[in-house]
Image 1 (cartoon, each protein chain N blue to C red):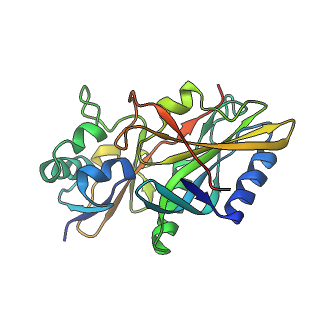
Image 2 (cartoon, each protein chain N blue to C red; image 1 turned 90 degrees about the horizontal axis):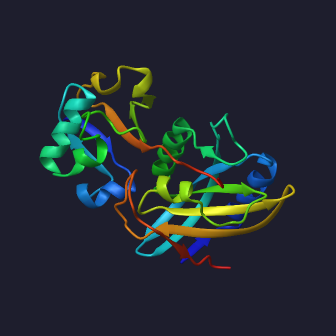
Image 3 (cartoon, each protein chain N blue to C red; image 1 turned 45 degrees about the vertical axis):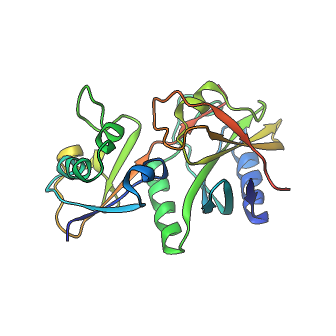
Length: 93
Length: 144
């Protein structure tokens, strides 16, 4: 069954669709699972220096911001949903 | 070409004038087909920036997640974002460019002394650009 992962538009050329399935028992494992299926995805999602999710990305697990759970170590199970939500920002100055 | 529904335009203008002198921000829900983008709804989101909200916006991630979920339920997608430039031209700043993502359209609404003036639309020249990129903005014509 796996974990359902919703990916934002700029990643969809890598994944081929807006929604993919991946396996894993934590957010970090799911990202690793995505990398196996869609090489190059992890570099987009994670800082190569730290291996952590990039600072301008938010990960939601079942509609809850993973920052307020256990971050990359947040446990997930079959049937859960992960949404990758870019941090949208800017401004006049 | 970008087409924004009449309701969508009204929502952007109302949000920009309501938020003045702060920047407003919101999410575009619609459809994309090649270079043609249709905005069905412009949905206001919270600007979470508290340090300098007159010149910067941080769109609330929880609002983005919720609006994207509601869009999917209607068979639509998130196609872009809008924000306002209070007392500043509707031209993207370096901050706008560097924090933008590929594949989305960005609308900037200029507000002068509390009154809406104009809006412009932009997209990056790299569909796959992700944070910390070097892509450039190109103007997107808005269908009148």
